Image (cartoon, rainbow, N blue to C red; front, side, top):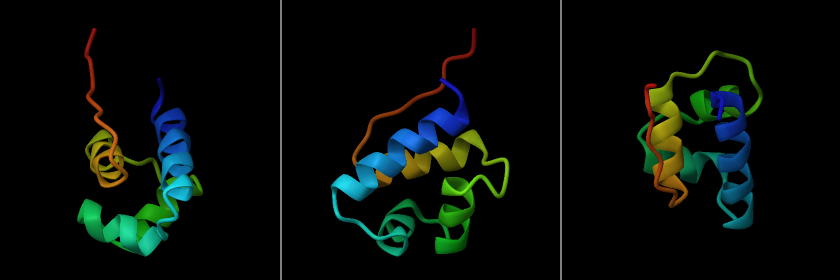
Length: 66
């Protein structure tokens, strides 16, 4: 799964949970602007941020290096 695919899945979970970007970002420990930029592909989000975003919406995620 690419970072972009992961962020799309995370966005779906965030919306299904009725969370705002601000609430999710607060749980993730990132800014709302960083969350928005990730969702709107304005930056190349790091895997570290993607993992924080996933945890914020209740997903367990990890990166496998093959």
